[in-house]
Length: 383
Image (cartoon, rainbow, N blue to C red; front, top):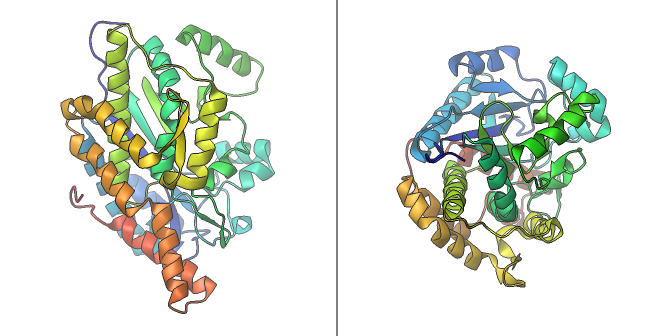
């Protein structure tokens, strides 16, 4: 590892579903000019995903969370403006409350047809949207070391991002149903542990050499090495409906990466725990989000999630201040107090039903909430 500090740049990727404003259902086959204009106006930062109804927005590598948030806000605003002319709008949520996955159309690109052919029924169920955060780390072995250590925090990050409590018109009982759907694909979930980049590369090359994957981008672990740039990529999160929540999670991730790097400078490391224990926490995050308890693996006991978040903020406070994103990290307390997107969706549904709405009308009210919240606070850091 070199003596100079990694750049710790930040890039954020978000996936959205396009919704028909008349029906609030997913726009299964939006007009081609919609995507073409979004791609052109964003200079390629907006791109198609597996389904025609999905878009992905990607910021460039940014020097600060404020810059990344501003870039993301600009992309959300532009997509909203363009899609609005076609009677559509984006929602930043991991699932749509009532859309039928069987009606969706695969994007006409070879890479997506190949995925559908390989994964079959598993691929046809993944009408899901996630958020990914890339942190610039320019040393190969350091990236692997940080991947090993960051795995511990995967459940915490998932719990804070939950936005998929509904699926196919059903309240699933899970706060992140997206993770259930994603787990049907291979090479997902918690990453393996590696002692070096050379070891990781050797195992990946075995898969590539035998034609099982084309490249390392087909490894869809919750945390992985970026496939195109020297980044550490955290990809466990549901798409965050609130842009403030998205910025807060990105700030937490880059601050954690810097904190773990500083531990390494002191010849220390976050203890590596068995994946079986982390997997239990990951399940509890899927099921309960921030409402439940997670195992504090050092203590060996369940701890209320709000206490864990307070401890996380304290852990990264110095690094967040140094990186200029302490305000965004402290927004996590606001997120806890008012709930994740999943909490707010459920609350919207229950309030609509209590007011006399039918089940369908209540689900449409949830979509209306998602439409509003996706476009809220795009002009500034409203905390």
